[in-house]
Length: 119
Image (cartoon, rainbow, N blue to C red):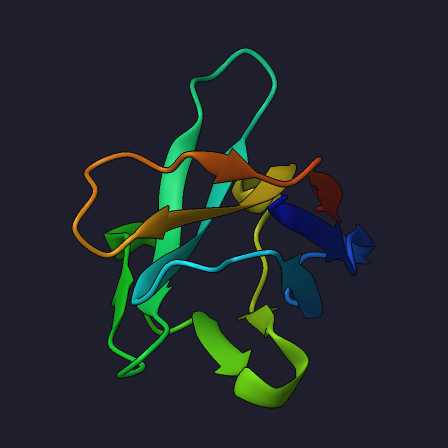
C-alpha cells in the first residue's frame, strides 16, 4: 500500500522560505517519479516540480525556476521541496504525488499541506 505523507507547510511572509517534505512508503515499482503539485483557491491543480528517483533528473514549471528546488533522500524515502523567495501567488495547498516512470499520470497522492505567503 502506497502512502505519501507531506509536512512542512505553514505561513510565511513574502520573500521567506519553507521546506516541504514527503515521506513515501510502499513504492514497490521502479523506477518512479515523485512530483509536487499545488492548488490555489478557485484554481485548478498545477504541476510544480518532479524528480526521477533513480537518476535524480528534475523538472520545474517556469514560475518556480530559480526559486524552488526539488531533492530526495534515498535512505529516508523522502522527497523535499525547498521554496525560497516565496511570493503571495505561491499560496496554495501543496501535494506530493508518485507515478511509475513510464506512466503518464500520477496515481498516488498525499493529503496535502497548506502554504500561505503574506504580502
